[in-house]
Amino acid sequence: MDLVQILPHVNASLNGLATLLLVLGFVQIKRHQEVAHKWTMLACFGVSVIFLGCYLTYHALLEGHGKTFPDYPPVGVRYFYYGMLLTHIVLAAAVPFLAVATIYYGLRDNRPRHRKLAKVTFPIWLYVSVTGVLVYLMLYQFFPPQVAA
Image 1 (cartoon, helix red, strand yellow):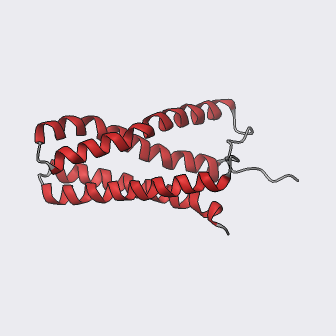
Image 2 (image 1 turned 180 degrees about the vertical axis):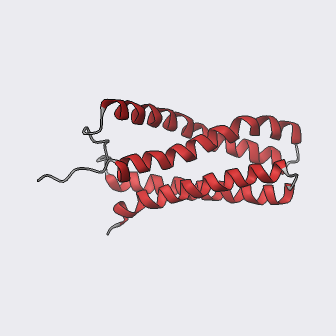
């Protein structure tokens, strides 16, 4: 198995780990565990940076031959997939900027700005992480390419 075949699974795993870290960080801050929250969110950002590197590597190695969603699932499933994919892509483009700004204000101990921005960043980042896993599941597990008979 070459790198192109492995990276989608790695990327889904990294998205899943980011999801878990985001939820853990949320629970920690609600429990006023600020130091743990800080390190968890920095770890989540690190995982997301690794994901981005793997994602870009995967698409660079594909050389323009991306994986397409098959046409055999029912039309409603295809509309759901493409709608989710569209929102995932648009919001994923914003996550790095939002995350960096939120982390910056947190590390600078500018709590009002950090909290205000985190209320926007958290749900978007969580949505992108969860839908990243769902896109993977739909593309590689639930509706894999059918083998010609």
